[in-house]
Length: 82
Image (cartoon, rainbow, N blue to C red; front, side, top):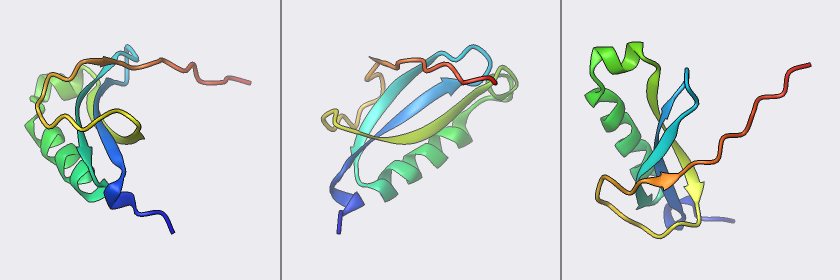
């Protein structure tokens, strides 16, 4: 069985309206990633939320970097419309 607590997770700041985003940090462990995501969400200003900003956690092969400002590029995958 795979141990999610040994995998690395990127905390991503993402704009739902513009589809722009950036990785703000990479942490080890799914639970730590989830906790950081909730913490970052809680710090968003009301205007940022209104502008479409949110955070999510995603498994990654990137190395751990606990400091904010990681700034990796996030590929934008267009949604399929049928």
